[in-house]
Image (cartoon, rainbow, N blue to C red; front, side, top):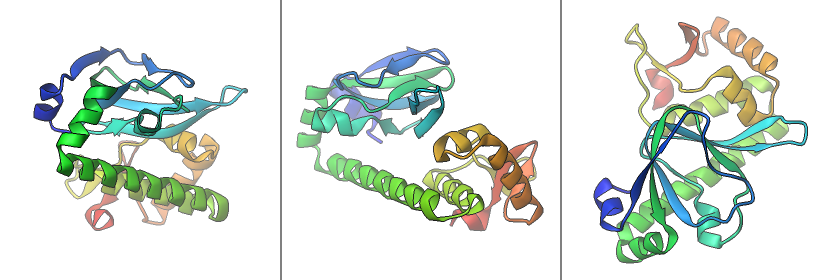
Length: 206
């Protein structure tokens, strides 16, 4: 979201993470701004029984963990690298100075936070009132429109960067339910399965 030029200008450094490495834990104090340079990071909470709930997935160019940073409360979730990743790290005081001095960056940052709030509202409403098929479809739509998707081998579809397990962990549905529902949606032509990956057509992304 913030350009590399701005990040380096205000003193950001690069942090390399191994797959499975935690960047911060639930309950820790937020003291840095983080943005994915390459790779992927997820924010998760875990129940007492060990069940994982994904609060957000973040890939190249996307920031995460900002509300605790801005409002000075502990992280409500932990952040973990989903694959080998490089993350920009900018101290809080430098980040606040950056926002004060760059109004356009501040505006873009506000838009991102508003879009995430809209997604959380949509997801909560879907889980509360809709059948699993519509819950899954709404999540797929959100991630299909969030940023450009890679084309599938057939050149007609785009691969959604979500596994069945990740969809289950984001929605609270059982993974068996997600697998069964995605298969049915494919049979109905609502989405496609290409090399076992979920894919959508171009009109869905518009």
